[in-house]
Image (cartoon, rainbow, N blue to C red; front, side, top):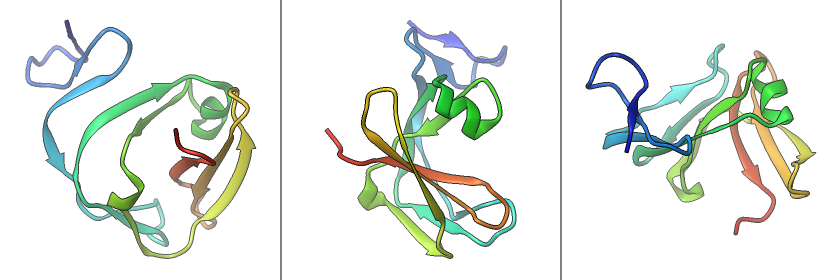
Length: 116
């Protein structure tokens, strides 16, 4: 069962448990940070989003948490620039690397030290 995220029936649907059903895969295009120093592409449509409300995601986003797209590493490609890396321990005890633009601070992506 899914519940609408907005009142428009064609908008994204949110199933119980917090994952968003994006419907048919949407092909991603070239993206960039706020200032344009970092550019990246994803070679697939985004089909899975997750939201997290851990303390680190709250601090990173400056809000109540973060919504992230789950993408295999081989489908993600940096096209321009080199993001800075911050390594922190997640609540699970694993190291989580967060990559961001050194110029404008925009979060670009995150990656766990070891993938299950």
